[in-house]
Length: 171
Image (cartoon, rainbow, N blue to C red; front, side):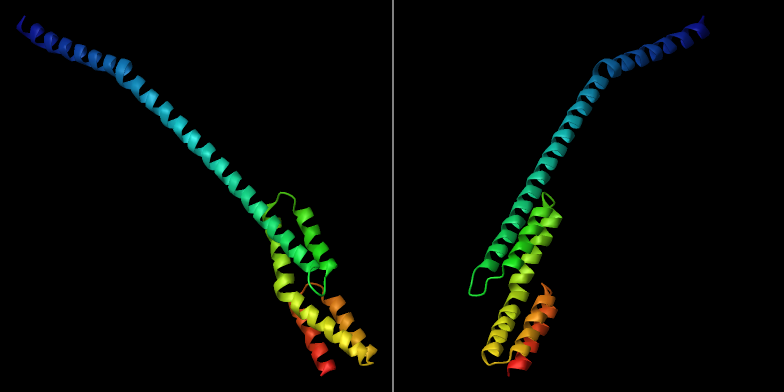
């Protein structure tokens, strides 16, 4: 009996201990871990939804800002002593085609800015010089400058060339 009692008694103690620990794990620890995992998953989903909403709001704000600036540039092209309705229409057509695309609307904004800040001044000078050439009786040179202006479109370098041409012909 000495052998059987010394082996079975500690073995029963180990089995009971393992069973108690397994019970604690399945009835206490595991439900806590599952609940924690559910909570962290819900928090992650809420954060993701908030980020998506924030990104959408930011895109909408960017879209409206670019649309507003492009429309302002288009309006500015109609103002002043030498309105340029064709350029204004080009910017507004771009805005219309851009729709809800932020990138396309930014291109329209850039087009309006380029025309207003880099092309318009040279166009106005060239147009004014063409008018002066015509009043001086040089209709052929005035026609060259106007033809250059028509072909330059909204390209800053080409319009600069028209201004330079007008400078050469006028002075």
